[in-house]
Length: 387
Image (tube, rainbow, N blue to C red; front, side, top):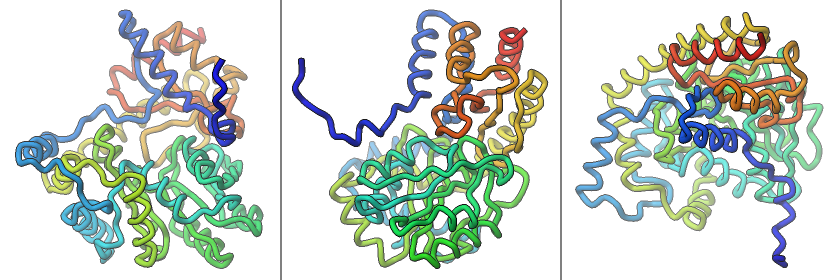
């Protein structure tokens, strides 16, 4: 028997259940089963051809060495240009740090901002890894239950009520995972004022910002210049496995972020960074916009189809590619339901348990990251299961 003991924090860092479901689904597929994937938050679109060509050119030209820890200057400038062109924001490229995915950005921010024992407020349900990044730096994640009455988002009133002398930061996401809901500009302004008046910092996850369907998007940086904003090339840009994201931070924090990035990551993949330059080309942006409309069509198909079976979606998602469905009329154990649907029907979905403790047994997340024909077959299989 091993005598090694892992760190105590590992008692509080739980697995990402959707990855177990994905592994199980892949195993069934390898055995010849037909599996319809609506579990993992990965678009079924790959990077555009121009991005792939740029990566191959970078390899051929020997652009494979270390880069600055904050990213190649050309990419930081391109990201700044994106904020200028889309939102009219004149950001200094120096304030942008390229990271190994948005997860790398969160790890950097928690390391730079959070001392041991300090609290970070966030939503329940919410993206499951957020609390683990706080745990990793010996902070204390504080998950606040949210529901349809606030569109599954925090409010300034919630922040004020939950704030303690140990609270350091608030983390929100718009659009949010798993619900696809948005924070209005007015609510975000109120949350920002509540946080800053108490000496805290606001972190806004905008990794699904490009996938908003029913209104014009805005960036939190339009609300205030000292908000920490995270984004990614994974979702809107379809570059999940390239592991590339970015963060925007106040100028006086960049040196600390740079120092920590040097020590943790050294640098992001050089070919991926040179490839990402092409993601902002007019050719690629037109492709991404076409895909956004396809995701919208998928949402508009899946939402009523699930409601007809007996699932309830109290707040229609305005962004991302998820439906967070209440299944309490069908089962009181969404975890078991998720595995039953996979094993008996070949439909992979994510149980609410992955996203927190707030009525998690009554919810399932559906990712509309596959085409309508496949989803239609998936819906029929689910209908058969309950009939």
